[in-house]
Length: 583
Image (cartoon, rainbow, N blue to C red; front, side, top):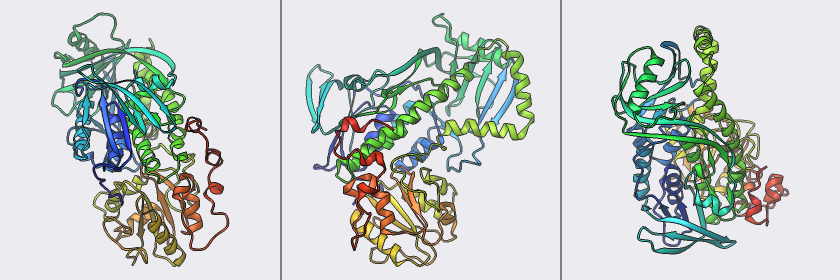
């Protein structure tokens, strides 16, 4: 039975090759290893990167890191940001403070942390699971058939290796060899050239907010690091002059803020032309792509790394279940079905964010003060903008409501497709802490309010635990409950979630007899007002026949194929390449 923290990979467990040891590849490797798979992680670079392109970890990613068990290490290395302040030609326009009132979360802020620091935390966590990075090992080609993948790896000394593995995950960046070998086109357009710099800045600005500054002709951004006096600087119009970044940033920042700013010699600079492109599908047979290997876009809203981490987390539990025979191959199709539409929406939102961040309009110097004076003085409008901006950046409003895995309207409880972590945001409450710990489990979670009458519910919960306890955690809430009749309690088995004051039940929206089925990535898959074998069988049907729920007595209509969505019914027996076609 899998535990909440996972165990190092066993000798007989399925194998996965992960290509690319950035934050996306590290997340994929960690979550596959935490579920008992043998993971080999290779990267063509000679060692860890020292520079940090991505510097913002948004709330939903922090929730994901919490579920992975690594959030404390990340928080210790970053600075919490709760505001966005705008200047134009020396005048402060508005400060938009974080407002997560409509998006409950335990992490109501974005964390400013260099990508290199995030990667270091993930490497340390991965090492605790017995997996290290093979640096300087480059994938040069691959072929696959219905039984496995053959990867050609080139080592630092020039020697080559033919490595055969059942599954391969490509997280090897914007120039992905995996993507090219699979023939996945990267569709879209080229865009603007921007410049980044990490540098010491002498300024009296408080480092508790991100700053957007308009000089009258162009815009810049300043993001404070935890390291005192150091900032990430972004120039949306770097020009053609090479070198002397400190002087150019000093002049432009001074013009935007209306006060002297001195930028010291940067520790790192980069001038790059970003693109807005993505693949039409993210799965080909036994190979997958995630992160920049699947989509590249503007850094304007800080979504690239965060989206890639969410993709890796989405894929890992599905691949682990399919590889271990706990679910059918149709589960793997849902990776692309869920994530391709999100990638398309991301391209659109980052295109808008890019326009707003660089804002080259010649009338900006006149229009911006007028517009934002109105915004600043009208509270409801300001709060609406704050929530709109935060909702798009935070990842907290992402929902899988339309996923094939979201099989029913719960009738009670959190909405299908929504984050269960929204019910675990109250610090110090035993119920919130219990759910937070439950979400760190590598398994699905069936949470049943057992306080009302329900021998039928107890039978369904007990049957589910006995049949699928290796990948399904059955938990109870409700006054006077001590677990499920006929099923032993224990730290690794079904049992009650602490909820002495009923706060958790109210947050989950569970009435007596109600239930919720929560996916391993923390999203609600199904639920209902009364737990029955029929209802639970319907909820588990999209996972495929291995996940079918045995019934004490034959009941009509419980054939998993008959209760699955039309898309999944049609995929039974279809080759993996075809399964990826998203809805």
